[in-house]
Length: 227
Image (cartoon, rainbow, N blue to C red; front, side, top):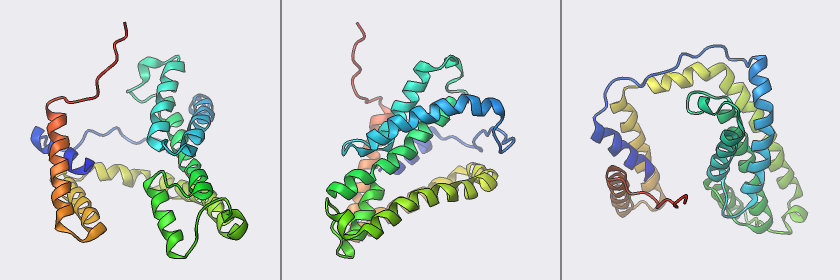
């Protein structure tokens, strides 16, 4: 739904040409980067994990809360929106911590609070495994293997992203017609694959158009007055 709305928004503005890119410099962090990042990392983790454990929470909520907190606490507020490293370090730490926190309601209560958790619980059910309070007792090897996979995943992120960061940036240089055509194709495939129904495709298009119309004419949530 968001993909269709965004694609229509870009098409309606008729933007052309490549996206402006900031040149990628050194892949490592300087001493100043480390000094400015370690506090946001800790604060982001402290914000993200509790939010992830709440059934109504999620990585998005934790990310925005962390960004808002870093912006309020930073002595360089003017740099936010222009590449302040605190605005990246904190929200990314919160995002990763929330992703791990999602496992708490999933494993203890059987409540999936994210798309990834829903996939995991569907896999559990396909093998006859019921998440809940007795899961640690009945399937302890599975639970600890799942927890260990979080550490393995972080290592793999470093292995993949650090050497290939220049390649990921190149993705933004794909001509927009090809890029958004691919996005719409995958969005349609994902919607159709749920029930193999053309009705889902029509709903996808209708909701995407609705989202674009609301964005085009400035529909947004009402703001509370500060006075």
